[in-house]
Length: 68
Image (cartoon, rainbow, N blue to C red; front, top):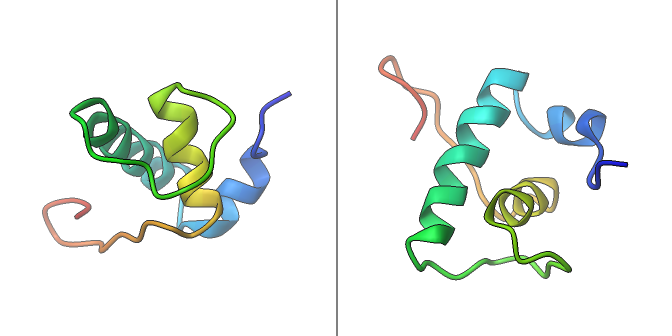
C-alpha cells in the first residue's frame, strides 16, 4: 500500500502531473544533500519528497515555463 495515498497527495496539488514534477524535483534536492523537512520512516528520496508534499512542507509556483 502506498503511504501517503495517491488521493491525498493529488488533493494537495492542482494535478497529478504537478505532483510528479514536484516530487521529482524535491527528490533530486534531497539526493544532492538538502535535508528533509518532514519526519520520515523511509530513507528513500522519493518517499521523503511525497511525505513532505502530504504534510504541506513544500510549496510550488506555477509559471508559464514550468513549476518552481
